[in-house]
Length: 235
Figure (cartoon, rainbow, N blue to C red):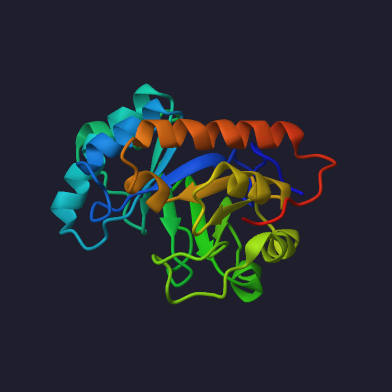
């Protein structure tokens, strides 16, 4: 069973812990402020979505978010094959992340690993998609719990379904979909996930720093207790 820090098929250290996915439409505050608060609460990985934005606006948003993460030793992951590196400083810094890597997250339908990327993950939903992984460093599996942001996929996997897919995965897995409570974080870790990816829990929060702190603390505690425990009942 993979654990945080394990490498994917490419052998490089991979994503783990609590990962926040952005959605400016759900955010109760400006997106940059929400991300800054989540980072202050302990988040070190953020996936920039906002794929409906014109590229120039999305690139500018990436340029705002990268320093927030880099200052904390974190990394901005860009959803899609375009790393949004437009300035000479960004190119020279290989993404200007805390570890200097260019990190991309691809959908199940996106083409293979871009040559510009140092770290690549992919969204998966079933066994067939997991078996197509070749050079990815990690995978998101969803939806674990009911969620309005993934209406096209389902039914929810719950802990047992997540654990079954993790056993089939050739790369470390992060759980995604409807994860909002410490109990759900613990259940995902007990199922074998090396991390949890959150969207609504942080974007909708009135206090994203506190929410992030509670969930990152729950993850750290669950990792410390994960060996030898049975899967916690879903809530």
